Every structure is written in structure tokens, then in C-alpha cells.
Length: 329
Image (cartoon, rainbow, N blue to C red):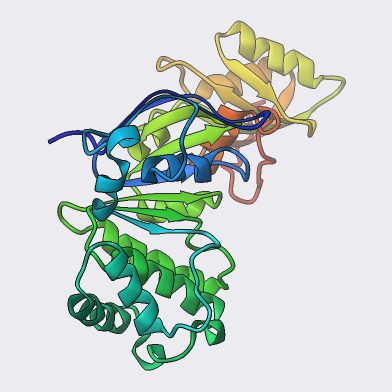
């Protein structure tokens, strides 16, 4: 089986604005999260994959086919849920989803039958004959999702699908996306700036910043390998200083990132390091170690490190949750 999509040295400009800057990717089938702040290039990348944007240079293949040459032919295999565009005032739910099916090559009869099925599955059965301009924000998102699914595509591209939803609507949408991600033989690319949504739905992630890909891979791999990272907290005694303890840690082979808050730091140690060394060095430097906890990794932490937001200063330690220990005097 070919890769879901492959991109080599992709560049795209909007006038003087460099929207995509040398993007290269090779992505397997599955549920993929596309992560980045607004303006990172996520929406542009999705439109390139759809063949809606004639990119400046590079090579883009979806299902093994060159998008520049076969983009129109690929659209029958792809569903697209835009962030804002797509709603047609005056149509009701059935008409809107049925029209999407017809535009993707389905007969009117089959498209309308499929529209009825999808609206029932997505909880819109009672609203199927209501005009779209009378839908709530959550209903609008679900009807756009139905329109992206009507022709049973192999790949669904979703641009900020939880945008504008209240907490209940967001939870419902994420549950729908998670169920879609588990369908055999189907893939989805889910673009968002809400990192928790990616962790809830996806197995892979692509992290973008300023038109570039700064990381791509399995979420498990991105979040793994952090067993040797600790957040520590201490109190200085009788003239001791932060600098003395931090220097002792560094001289012992630890990588230290001090916090803006006195008496706190993020520390990365080697496999040979034992926790007792933290206490021994604290005793030697006349400080009292009051907090020692392994750093909990999530996509937010990984993202912040990769894109440099805005520093590598660790978060403040919640001393109520940390392991409170006193070094032996």
C-alpha cells in the first residue's frame, strides 16, 4: 500500500507571504493530527492536499498520485470539512448533504439516501428539513462533517472541526471523530490549535510553525523517553543560593533549566543517575529539597519545546503534588 501522502520541498507563497516553507513529509495511513498556531500553514497545507491551491514549487502525492496532475481525480477519495466556508443559505440539511454527494459523483437518489443515513447517525434526524441558517454552531459543524462523509471517502481532511463549539459540543464532536478514526481502511487528517483534541483522537501528529514542519511522527514516540526529566523545588538555608545548587547539579552531569521562580528548576539526568543524588547534592550545598517529581509529558509540553514558546523555563511546581522530602541533616 502506498503512503497516505508524500510531500517533498513544498513551497507556497501568497504574494510576499511565505505560507509553506520547504515542507517535506511522508505520512502513513491512520488518524493524523496537524498542530500549529493560527498562521502556521495548516489550512494552506490542507488545501494543497485537496488540489485547491496551485502551489509555488515542490512535489505532493496523495495515495501515490501527483496532486498537480491528478488533483481532480483524487477528490472522489477525499472528504473535506472546512473551518468556515461551505454552508449554503436556503438549503436544508438533506439538500446540503445530498448536493455534496452529487458534486462527488453520486447519483441524486443515492446521495439523498446516504444523506438521510448520515444525519440520523450524527444526531440531526429531526433537523434534516430545517434550513441551515437556523442551525446552531454545533449543528453546523455536524452537517459539514456529514457533507465530508457522504461519498464514503478514504481520507477526511478536517480544518478546526471543534472551532466555535461549547464544551458539550466539543466533546460530542471529538467522540464522533474518534469513532471515524477507528474505521478500517480509512484515514483522517485533523487540523487544530487545540493540542488536547489531537491527543484524544489521533495516533500521529505533524507539528507546524511559521510554514515549516518542526516534527512529525507517532504520538507515542513524541511523548516517550522522558523518564529522566524531573521538576525540582528547594529552599535555601543560611546564605546558600540557587546558583550553588544548580552549579553542583550541572557539574554532576545534569542538564538544568532554571525557572523564573527562585528555588525551582527542570532537570534532565542520565540513566545512571539516582534520585538520592538530588538530596545528596542539596545537603552538600546546604539547601533543603522539598519537591521532586517526574515531568509529565503531553503534546503541549512537546509543542512548547519544539517551537520555543517562549522559553524552556519549566512550569511552577505544585508543591502539594510533589514528593516532599527533606534531606538528612
